Length: 164
Image (cartoon, rainbow, N blue to C red):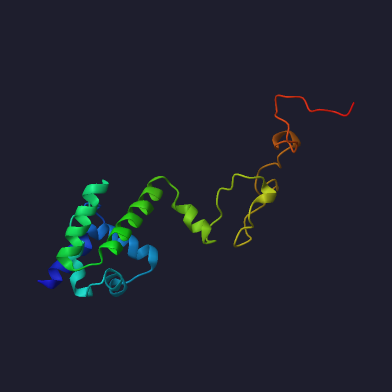
């Protein structure tokens, strides 16, 4: 029966209805295996399949706390850690859906972010293989002086003061 539970728990890890989904996202983001995840939760690894088959806690604050307390109490888990894991997974999923997970990779230096500032302020590519903006290889031209933000502190619609 343990093998069947483990297989079922592995299948539900892709379904956000189940707690296994949040546990998988968290474990992947932290580089944890089953043993490490179980240790973080404060339970034996053999108990993880049953934990993964629980319904994911409700996102609303009062119900969330009640759901966390019920799951933690049933399996003897650390409630504070379980709550942190679920919120961590929800945040990563929200970033993924918003298309921003690439920024997390960029923060680790693995990909070049879509930097909003001028080319001179952009960090160098980690591989050094990307063409610089404005080069013939990039297919674009350097921003002209008129495209750049003014250096003066004057508002754009007010004339600059001159010495009289």
